[in-house]
Length: 231
Image (tube, rainbow, N blue to C red):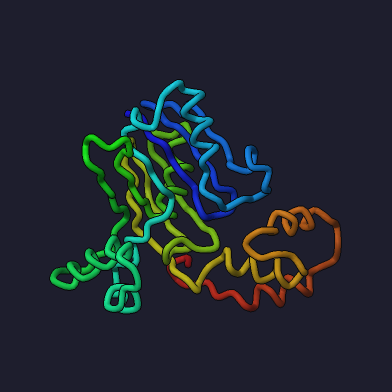
């Protein structure tokens, strides 16, 4: 099985090629278009991966995108589905309407399939935090491990906790926005004059300086409430 994984529209658009149990190639788009932290579609990164493996797009079995618009089907969206503005909205609005006839359960992934004669492989849109969990667990040396992911936000989730075992990942605890550790971090990034959801690495570097910040730490910690279940 050959899979291309995409990070598109987020910081550092990128592509990676996976074959069997091996990562064959991967690259961020910024290496080719010279636009640092670019969010553009990774055309050149995909081409690099295909050329490295000496294959074409038609040889790919699946494409995986690290964001799932289908997660929003957990709740009917009238602004898109009732009053669609263009026919491309059917990709979202038709499933949204059909789910009104049944039970609405959040989807961890959605698959878009194309005719067999098409050169485009099936595209899986995977929940953002599930891709983080897969990245952590499947690249680790462990056959079984506890998994914790935390960032600014995914579709709704900003923290997931679960267990990985073999080829399976089970998420049993979720925390959603606005209770986000990443957003909390980004707030202080912006307070210091940097760009939130971008320059957090600069704040991380500042933490290495030896300064007396006990008073600030107490004030910051006073804004956080720890719940009995650890969240």
